[in-house]
Amino acid sequence: MRFELELTAESKIEDPRGHSPETLRRLREAIASGAPANPDARRLGFFEIQSDDQVFYIHVSPATQKITLLATWSHEPELEVASSA
Image 1 (cartoon, one colour):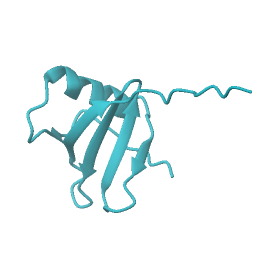
Image 2: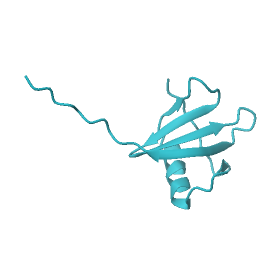
Image 3: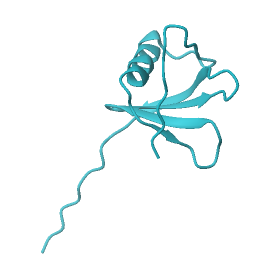
Image 4: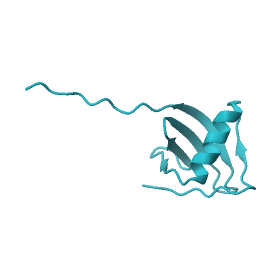
């Protein structure tokens, strides 16, 4: 399922874990460019956003639409395993 987040100049991204300004910039760019937000099936309002080689784990408040960055990690493409015949 794809979820579109709309980021405006007024949108606030909270960062309780103190990620770098570069990480926050990349998250803003990912949201602004329409990167897909994949919902966490176990937690309402939580999403993973993948942008190039980075994944952001966020919460979007249903009341205020405020975005909270909770975690980020590198995304490495799955390696294709060649089978020998």
